[in-house]
Image (cartoon, rainbow, N blue to C red; front, side):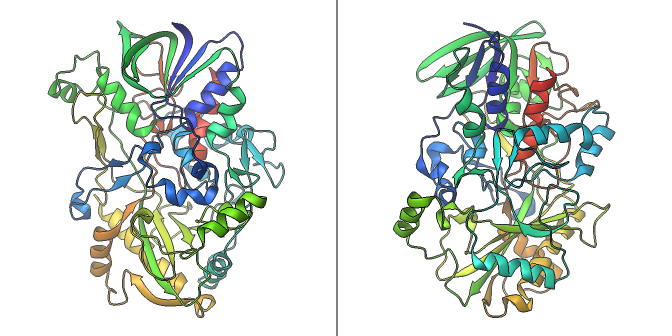
Length: 520
C-alpha cells in the first residue's frame, strides 16, 4: 500500500510523529512497531517498573559486548519493545538537560538546535501541573506532574544533600539545573503517561493512521538514492509498503541496525556481512554514548524502605485511589552536581535516590532493608559503536560502548562514588543508615573504588548518538534530520544527538520529534 509517511518504531519519537503527522487528514501514515500493545498493567502502574525489567515480552533485553573497562562484563541494556518504547518501561523522570547541551549542538554547525530554538518544543509537548511559565507549558500531550507519593527517606536524602553543601532545586528544568529536589514525572493522575498514552492513544482512531504491531522491520527499500518503502515481517508474513517519506524512529540501537541491514553504513562492515552497499556512510553506528552509573548501597535501621512491601496492600491502595507506593516511580528524589572536575558551568554528575536496595537493575534481590544512591557522570568522553553480528534482521546487533575508555571517565566515576558516600554520611541519615554494602567500608582509595566500579557499574539506559546530526565525516543526518546522500529518508530519535544531554533522555527525544514534525 502507498503511504505519505512510514514511521518505523513506535517509541517516544515514533508516537509523537504518528500523532503530529496524522493530524493532517490528507496525510496517510503507517506506524510499524516490532513489539506489541501496551496492555500490561505493570506499564501503567508506576511502581510496576520494578517488575518490567524481567518481562522480556516488553523488552529487547540487549546485552553489550564484553567491556574491557569493566572486567569483561556484558552490561544489560533494557529497551522498550512495546507501544511507547522505553517511555513505557522507564522511571518516568522528566528532565531536559542543560541549556549548554543544546547550544553545543548548534555550535557544531547544527543550526536551529540551540537552547532557545528547542525550548518552544519542550513547552509545546508539556502539560505542566505547576502551571505555565517561561520554561513550561500546560496544553501539551505529556502530563508532567509532581509525585503523588514519596517515601519519607527521600525527604531525608534531600536534607542530607543540603547538609553536604548542595543547593535545593524545585525545578531541574527551569532557570537552573544544579541542586537537589524531587523529580517531576511523566504521569497523569497516578498513572504512567508514556508517549503511547500521550500521543498515540488520542490519534489511534484516525482513519488516516494505520498502526501495525508485531512488525519487525527488515530492510528499507531504495530506488537509486531515494528511499521508497519498507520491507518487514508481520508474524510469518513478509510485507512491503511504499511511502513518500520513510522516517526511522527505532532508537539509538535499532535505527543504525536497520540502516546497515539496508546497505547504508560503513563499507567495511557491510562487506564483512555480504550486504550490498547502497550508500557508504561511515558514521552509521559510530559515536555511541551512554551514561554509566554506579550504585552506593547501605543497610537501613528503619523498615520505611520499599524493600519488604506487601504487594497486595500496595495494589489495593493503588486501585482504590491511584496513590500510595504504587504511584511512586521509586527513584523519587535526586540532583545535579557541578563537581571539582567540571570543565564548564554545567552539572557533571546526576544522582537518583532509591529508598530500597537496588542491585543489578533490581534483578538481584538483597535481604533486609536499605537505600541506594545512583550516580552517573553526565558528559563522558568514551565513544563506542554499534555493528552487526549478522545480516539476519532477527539477530541483535553488537553493542560496544567502550565504557571507562578515558582517564577523565574513570576519575568522574570515582567522584560519583565518593560524593554518594558523602551524602549518606550526613547527620540527617544518622538514625537510618547502617553498614555500607557497596562499595564496602574497607574500600577507601581511588584504586579500590575504581576496582569496585569495574566490577559493579551498570548502564542507566541513555544510549544516544549512533546516527548523529552534523556536518563532519561521521554525521549521518543533517540539521533537518534527513539522511545525508539519500532522498526520502529521515532519522528522528535519540540516535541523532551529537552529544549526550546532561540528564535523562526521554524528554529530549520527544522534543526532537516535535521539532521535526513542526518543521517538516
